[in-house]
Length: 139
Image (cartoon, rainbow, N blue to C red; front, side, top):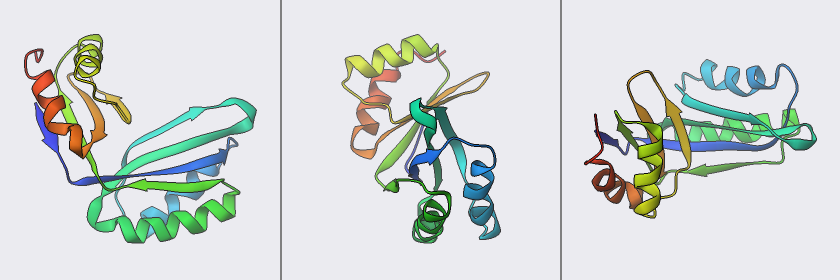
């Protein structure tokens, strides 16, 4: 298991769900040399969506500025950010991970899965509790 406190989270809220918007969001970040990962987008009702992602905490100020401009350009409803996040990565069955975190009253902010692991973004204040809850279920 791994706990990482080095990332921050940005979410563009109420983004029009049309082709090309993701390119408009991520191109200026890439041009500024800001590495993003764990991108989450989900189709929502009414032709809008939210786009969330993680980035290094030390690039947060630049990213907020860029995302604020981009939100205006694409007619998004706003930008949300959080620097008090942690990633908890574990090699375990998703159902077991979600059950263990629920039992420990840890809210999951983002999820990404890979072939051998599952990473959950949680509040930094919950990370140690999450790690403790997951320590017994790792493969």
